Length: 82
Image (cartoon, rainbow, N blue to C red; front, top):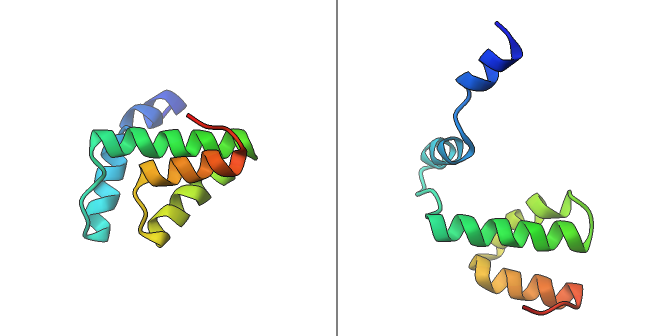
């Protein structure tokens, strides 16, 4: 099996997240939540280094915050607004 065949056999990111959410017994994020989480990841990664992106999203979940609030806090931490 070639590398391309393996890549073709994998689910796309949204399908993987939906399957993972099902394994966790929770609903996957909707399209708006996905976009906000990706924005948060971008803010974190550009303000620091790449590892900040997934860890920031994990912290949001642990804190029980919505992604929009977290983006605002991240931008404040970074010193940038909007």
